Image 1 (cartoon, helix red, strand yellow):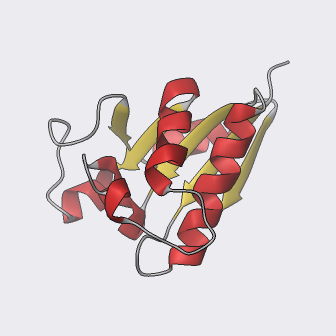
Image 2 (tube, one colour):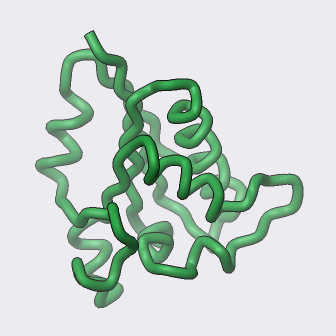
Length: 120
């Protein structure tokens, strides 16, 4: 049975430590070979856009752009449908590899056998 870690990031620049924790945990798990699905919700949805992760800085934290790259390379990144719509973000706006999906997909992923979910 495959192990999957679903991480939901609910914060962005508005709560930088919480945001960085979500990305750090997701990237660490991905680097360790765990199947990772990172969900960008709320203010973290902005990081689905090109260049936005590069603008984020938190002392003593790995660069968000590097963490996002690890996750995009080895896992899956999803922007919340409603969160994206509230920010006028469409499928053509996001980074390559980022999908936009809703609550039904999130529930499906978190309820899959072997899945664990963390919300930051």
